[in-house]
Image (cartoon, rainbow, N blue to C red; front, side, top):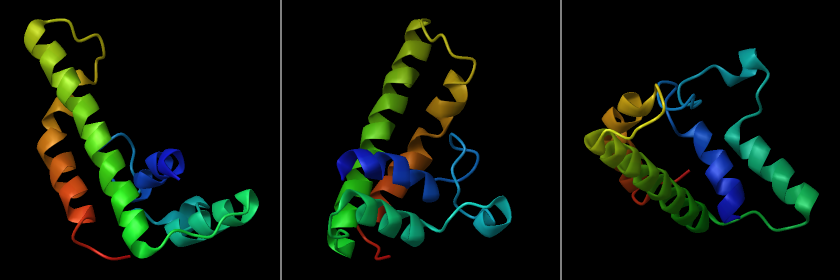
Length: 109
């Protein structure tokens, strides 16, 4: 579930942050809703869908994991070793991502 939630968090990230889906008209794009996507995944792998509390845990964990990656990129920028042309954008998004991760611990679906 942890690996799948890493993928699922795109539904909760804004478009300016690595192409997230938050606020995007998913139906127009032909993308299923987060709930439908989760239900389909669980059905196909034969598992019970996670509770709202479990999903919040996995979502927060993975967003903080991504924030750690962004923090590492910020460190590479400081050392002058960042290779990606998107490095500064990712580093600039770090505070917003950390806030989104924390929000996962305080909200329900």
